[in-house]
Structure formats: structure tokens, C-alpha cells
Image 1 (cartoon, rainbow, N blue to C red):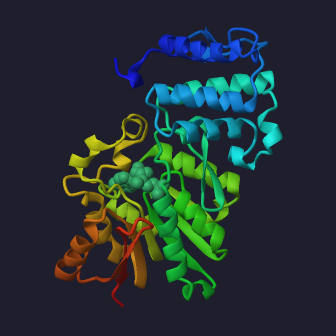
Image 2 (image 1 turned 90 degrees about the horizontal axis):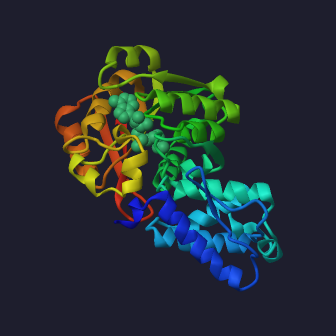
Image 3 (image 1 turned 180 degrees about the vertical axis):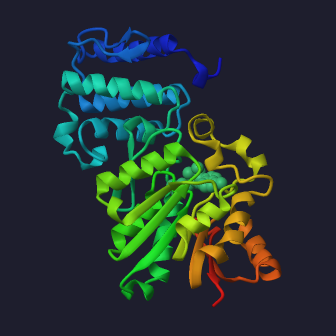
Length: 341
Ligand SMILES: C[S@@+](CC[C@H](N)C(=O)[O-])C[C@H]1O[C@@H](n2cnc3c(N)ncnc32)[C@H](O)[C@@H]1O
């Protein structure tokens, strides 16, 4: 049987064995884990220090083929202790024991990670630039490249930030990461965010409310492939369009990590045969949504920038291709376009 498909009870047996190693060392006086109602849990009165918990869960994750084993246990245990990472804890604190409540929480969350659930969904939050956002499956988990997209927008538009009001549209807002970061950095910005997924719309609303941006953000449940006229009526005119649309080629979906495929919404990832279905629709609608000389910023697959450039130059007279930018791995990932004045 593949490690990732191992049953909860066989996992429980493995963890019990590894804890017995410590028990022999005299640290833990009794069997450290019980399988309670199908969930992994330590018995109420066993003593586990922070570093022991990290070590046993890291080994357990490794043994069961869970990716980023050490990082996963580090994030989960730090989260239970109210920290972002364990590096921010003093060395002495690592040797202190977890309280009963903390230990139960660590075991419950790590058991979830053992099902391959991404750590961001396990701890139900994730940092994006300066903000901590709520995360919930199946809404797309923001990736580090998208932080670069936001930096690019902020840098490119510095000259416009002096205007007393600015309006931005985000197509495919997911958890709200891009719109909320822009609102956080630009006090005079008003934003409109849309997504075809009701779960994404609800999560963006929840994040906006928690961060106090709901008064500057309108959120719509719209599918830009179908609700074209309604999208134009509800959202235009805007100074800026920003989007990290689904852009994977359908053929590449199979090669994604299984934890992405199992937990994240496929319609957030699959951009059709050439990865450009939603991108083409955004390009088509952009001249109707943007003000004259308004700008558009897209995060795409490295194969897309030359295709988008040719498409715009050959067929989309309303738009001008301004340039492409690389991400931190030096791959062409971002396109800047402008509506002709
Ligand atoms: C790659 S995710 C990006 C989410 C978020 N902007 C981020 O960067 O974390 C793409 C998002 O586009 C949304 N989406 C896909 N097709 C769409 C469509 N036709 N109309 C509106 N939104 C769409 C998905 O539901 C998903 O939330």
C-alpha cells in the first residue's frame, strides 16, 4: 500500500512505536498515543515537550510521504503555541512541556495533515505580504509569486497613487489576497473583486471584514466566461485590472502534487487546453472595463507572455502590450498591458 493511503489505525500504530522509543529513554512514562474514534490522540496524562512533539510528527510525516515534513510540524505546533514559527521561540521554551489542551490540539491538527491536507488549511490561516488571511478548502491558497505580482502593481502605479481616488478590479479573487493587500497599501483605493466560486466570494468577504476593508471593497459572485454584460455593468470603469487567473494547461493538471489536486478547487487552476481560456476572456473584456490608459496586470504561465503579446498585437486593437516581468525563479510570469487612449 502507498504510504499516503495508509489507514488511520496503521498510522496510529506507527506513531505509538516511535513514541515508545522515547518512553524507553524515560521521558514519557506511558504509551503516548491512542486512537480515539478514528482520530490520533495522546492519552490525557502523558508528558510531551515541544521539541519531542516536533520530532515525532516530523518522523511520522516523513514515514507517510507527507511533503515538507519538518516545516509542517513546525508550522502546526507553532500555530498551537500562538506563534508563526518555532524559530521565534526561545530554546528553553522548546524543552517545556505542552499543556494537555495544546497537546490535544497538536495531535488533532497533525492528524489532519496526515491525510495530506495542506498545512494552510490545517491551521486555517496563511500570511500573504503583511496580512494574515483565513484559509478554507477548496479556495486557492495564495502562492509567493503572487506577492511579487502585488509588488509589481504597487511599484508600477506609484505615479498614480497621488490621485485622490483609484478603482481596481480583481478577476478571480480566491481568498482576497491580492485585493486586500492593495487596499492595505493604498489608502485611497476602492476595489471590486469577483469570483465564480461562492466559497471564494464568502472567504474574501470574511477576510475583508476581519481586516476592516469591507467599506472599500465590493465583492461579486460572477463568472466572467458567462456573466460578461453583468461583469461590465457591475465593475467598470476601473483604473486597474489585476488577476492571477487559472492558467495551467489541462494536460499539466495530472502532474500536480496530489495534495493540491485533492484539496484545491480545480477551476482555480485549470486554464483549458493552452491554459488561456480565462486569460483570453479577460483580454477581450478589458477594453470595456478599463478607463482610457488604464492598466492590466496578469500572472501567467511562462509560455504565455509571447502568446499574449502576439494575440494583443494581431487582434486586440483596444490594448497595448507594455511588457513582461520575471518571478524570483527568473521565469517570465507577469504581463503588463494598457488600454489605448
Ligand atoms: C489561481 S486562483 C487565484 C486566487 C487569488 N487571486 C490568489 O492569487 O490567491 C484563480 C481564481 O479565479 C477564479 N476563477 C476561475 N475561473 C473564473 C471565471 N470564469 N470567472 C471568475 N473567476 C474565476 C477561481 O475560482 C479562483 O478563485
